[in-house]
Amino acid sequence: MPNPDAGNWIYAIEDAALLEGHMTAVYPKGVNVLLVRIDGVVHAVSGKCVHMACPLFTGKLEGHGHCAQFDVSNGEALSGPVPSDLGHEALPPMLGAYMGNIGMLMAHVRTESMRAYRTRLVAGWVEVDL
Image (cartoon, rainbow, N blue to C red; front, side, top):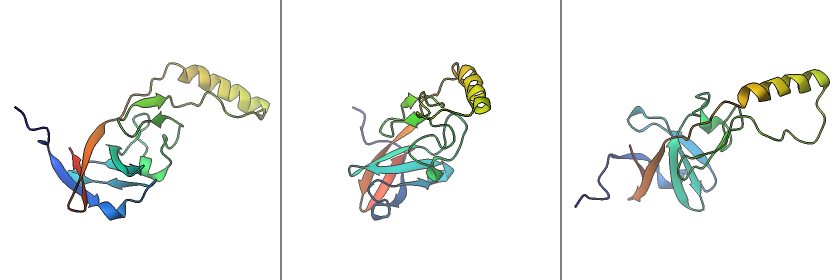
C-alpha cells in the first residue's frame, strides 16, 4: 500500500513567519510558490498568474494585472481575466469603446487553473510537496 505522506516535501518557511490573511513568495528548490494562510490553514499555489505570468505576491489574491480570481485551496480558476462588472459609473466615450473592444477580444480567452501544492507543518516549519 503506498504511503500517503510520500512525496517531495521541502521546507519552505517558518510557520510563525506567515501571518493569518497574508501571503508570501517562497522558492523551494527554485520553484516559485505562493503561500497563503486562510483560517489557520496554509495553502500553496504557483507563484505566478497563469494568464500573464505576473508575480502574485505583489498583488491581492487575484491576478495582479487582469482581475483573474483563483481558489488558493486547489488552484481552480474562478473567473477570467476581465471582470464582468467594472462598476456603475459611466466611462468616458473613448474608454468605453476601447473596453468594449477589449471585452470582445477577451471573451475567448480562457483562464487556466493554477498548480496547487500540498502543505504540512513539521516542527515549526511549513513544508511544500513539490
